[in-house]
Image (tube, rainbow, N blue to C red; front, side, top):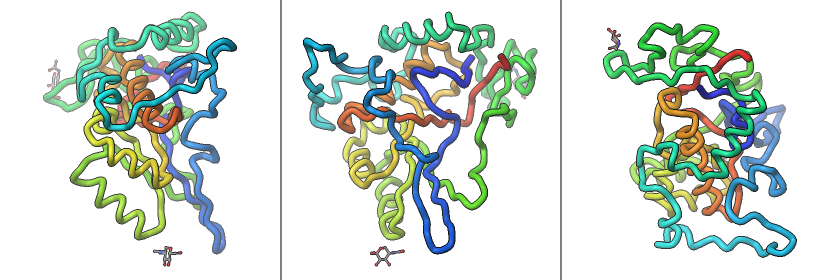
Length: 259
Ligand SMILES: *[C@@H]1O[C@H](CO)[C@@H](O)[C@H](O)[C@H]1NC(C)=O
Ligand SMILES: *[C@@H]1O[C@H](CO)[C@@H](O)[C@H](O)[C@H]1NC(C)=O
């Protein structure tokens, strides 16, 4: 049910902080771009205050980690239903569906705890077929990026920020004069705001690994939007208004329909 074009909200299937090593020089970039959308990108219309000619004051963000800040978000690791998405996000989803940009006939999968994989139509539908092409089964779509190009290294980490591992990772990166791309989980940012700020202040790249880390193909389109939207919102509110442009699906679990 998820395709490559929840365009208003997101992003790219894979991304990384790419270091291009050439002779004695190395350059650092995410696919040649910032980790966040430009400030005039239309995605900003879906978040925060919408500036108008009569109301163009800059949005004021609460202090990261404060009570006011915490009150803005769902509970950590809450299972997000369609009702958790902001109405503007659902409107955007419905618009792109109406425009035929997102497939509407891919069945929502069910997680099979015995096999450890999502199944579609009770296992009747091929997960590597024309209707579903699930990355959990290593089905690759034509536009998926799996490997870094020749001469490039991708340095990226999933699931943080976490008190056991993030400080070790950060101090190692620092000792090597490196930054990295962090595919953070929104719920972990909510619980570890200082560790979010440390990576952000270090100039690392912030990317989306959803709010609660579900198998994406087992939840409704609206819940997908909520999972992506709340991660984007917590990063936005905690980074002075920056909205990440890259997403990595938890477990690599996405499905696609050839349109
Ligand atoms: C789940 O996976 C197991 C093991 O692969 C399989 O035997 C079973 O038929 C699958 N489906 C259901 C609904 O349990
Ligand atoms: C990191 O940068 C510092 C200052 O330029 C330098 O002294 C140090 O050798 C560098 N460390 C590595 C591992 O490259």
